[in-house]
Structures are given as C-alpha cells and as structure tokens.
Length: 266
Image 1 (cartoon, rainbow, N blue to C red):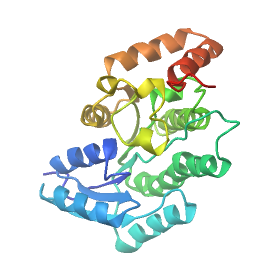
Image 2 (spheres, rainbow, N blue to C red):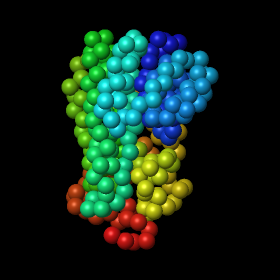
Image 3 (tube, one colour):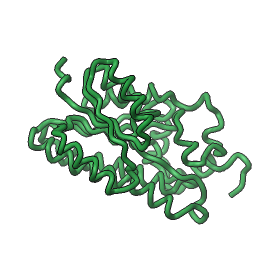
Image 4 (cartoon, rainbow, N blue to C red):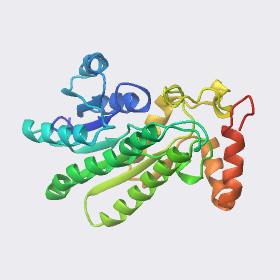
C-alpha cells in the first residue's frame, strides 16, 4: 500500500519489456504514466493496468522528436504528477552495414535511444534530488558490451546508455536515488521487425529468444534491490563474461558472424 501515492513513468509501455514492466509496477500498486506513440494502444494498455487498482495516465508522444520529450515533461509538471520511478525503456535499432543504412533513420535512433534518455533523466532527476528519493531504470543491452557490425549505431547507443547509467549512479551514491541498468540479450519482442532484422542469423532460432516477461522481472527485481546492473539470462551472462576477456576486434568479428543475414551477403 505504501506505493499508492507513487508514480512510475515508463516509455515504450504498450509492448515487449516495457509492457511487462508496467504490469509489475501496477501489481505493486504504483500509479503509472505510460508513454508510446499510438493512443489507441495506450488506451487498451491503460484499461488493462487499471484492473490492478492503480491510476494510469497516458501520453501519446513520439520520443524520436525532442520537442515531444520536452512536451511530456511540461505536461506532467502542469498536471502536478510527481515521478518517483523513471523507466527509460523505449529504444530501437536499424539493421544493415553502415555504408548502406539510412542516415535519417540512424539519427532518429540516436534521438530516441540517447537524447530522449538524457532529457527525461535531467528533468525528473531534479525533483528526485529535491525529495532525496527516486529510482531510475535504463534499458541497456548486452549490445552495450561489444561492438556490433550490422547494428553499429544501435550498439553504440546502448554503450552510451550503460556508461551514462554507471556514471550517474556514481554521482548519486550519497543520495537516496538509485540507478540500475538492465542488459537483456535477444528477446522475443517487435524490436527485430522494426529494425528490419528478421533475416539476421541471431534471430532465426525463436526458441533462443528470451521471454520479455522474464527480462522485465529481472530488471524490476534488480531495480528494487538497488543493483547497479543486471544481465538477464544465464546464456547472456556467459556471453558478457566472454566478451570481457576478448579483445574488441575479436568481439566485433564474432558479432559480425552472429548478426549477418542468413543468406550470407555482406
């Protein structure tokens, strides 16, 4: 019951890991601010989450656009909604060799994965510091730990997210504000469709993809336990452990082989 007056803001909350995280917060009686681009999908998700007896505020925002991110911050300030937990979940990728991929799409991904994360953190952290309480969860990825041929921009943005979260955690170590990074591996979400990546070797075995419900639970448990970061799944822990002892160039070559198209083109 102690969470009934607390709000968690979750970006990308209508599907995948973000949706599963929203359910976990609702089960623990956090009120919610859920953000996605499609209002109809937000309405359906909100109706489901309200069944847990919590308040749910929806905001249809295109977080690829910085003006929409700032607009979300302003909207919540005007409504007097205080954010106690910030979940920076929304993120996308683009698949292909860098020489061939679309620059505008890549810049949009930088805006979503990095710029929106910075803006939301800067805004809501200020009030957390005034109250000396709060929690922040970042969706990094095991992609943050290795160079990523065929997804060079995505891996680069996730490396930023992990580095940023670890730096921020250090800066806030003398406060009651906690920062946690969640590092999943390939997960059974719509990410690969949106990235035009369904032809990649790494996603051919659907049984090897993690369940977003399991990933969300790992992240939620780590956040509530004040962990600095959590690699979700035993296989991913092994991959990260191996990547830590191999050279960057060897990690890049291994990732290039794993992520290349099944038809073998390059």
